[in-house]
Image 1: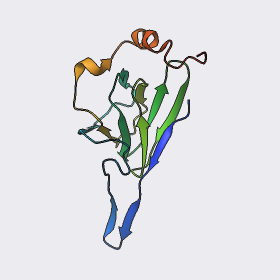
Image 2 (image 1 turned 180 degrees about the vertical axis):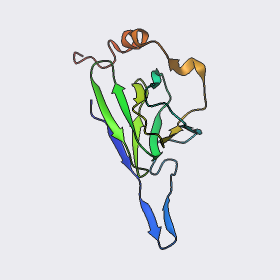
Image 3 (image 1 turned 90 degrees about the horizontal axis):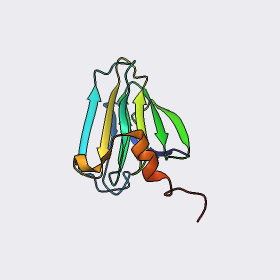
Image 4 (image 1 turned 30 degrees about the vertical axis):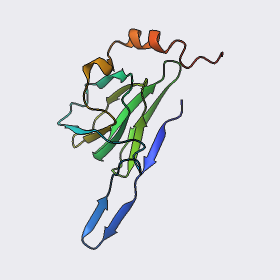
Length: 138
């Protein structure tokens, strides 16, 4: 599985730098929720779930972390370390975040409001749900 990155334009001058994030322009969906996590332990994993419908863009606005992406058939790891490069996490993608730098601030932009019923929390449940979704046959 190939990760999908979203490159964000920097607007910079002598006063500093700015990155604008806009629904349906540089984020490929209508944003409904934005949250960020910080004060993270480098030895613990976050995420460890998939969403049935929700899509997200992950941005390391400070520091860095590693993402594991899994579609049920293939896995890939990517390091996020730039506030100008987002990672698209589509629906039905198991994702885990780990190896957080001490200064990591990870921002998530979501297509939907929080809905516990949208979460797939058990990895074995996720594998059962994706068994035929990405099947090379048919």
